[in-house]
Length: 255
Image (cartoon, rainbow, N blue to C red):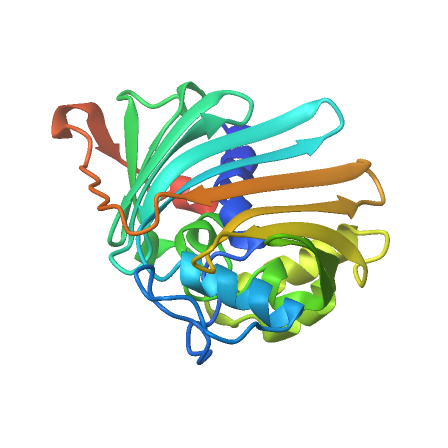
């Protein structure tokens, strides 16, 4: 079970590092039903505001992270404003996670509980908890906050470079996000030059993001994400009480 904890937390953190929760106070950001800006934005601003626009309401996400012959895949639907998430995936064992407010429900055979689901109270987790970061969609800016250059290479397609150090500087200190990005920067061979590709739709939503971190120890870490179903209502229900057990106080130490 202890082996699973870091894997599960990392899997749920895919969205976090990719930029979910950018600062929507940017005047260029707008809700999912808003019309695109009438004037064309410069590339860096277009990508950043594209993420803001995508996360302004409900959405669906498909993501993967690959390092060598290891991979993590995630599929989910979420409503960041209402703090509702439903994520399934493999890391590499099958996993499922649901968030309703501050209640997180986790399901994986490797958790070794007496019941299929484990319930955790996010308010009991440490501020720098990776799992807590994974569900905090507004307390950070992720790699998107560190974009230093970008250029449009086709209709709605962009390439560029991000700086993990600058991303950490731009991130909120809440929920330990800044510390998480700083840790990622330490793993990278060159944290100042992380190549990325992004795609925006006609409405200005960021619909695809991929980037590669060349690490010092495990080779290239390749992350790919697709966002869709903007504004489509999301409903998440708690698992049946008969199939759920509360996490023990000891368990919180691992998250």
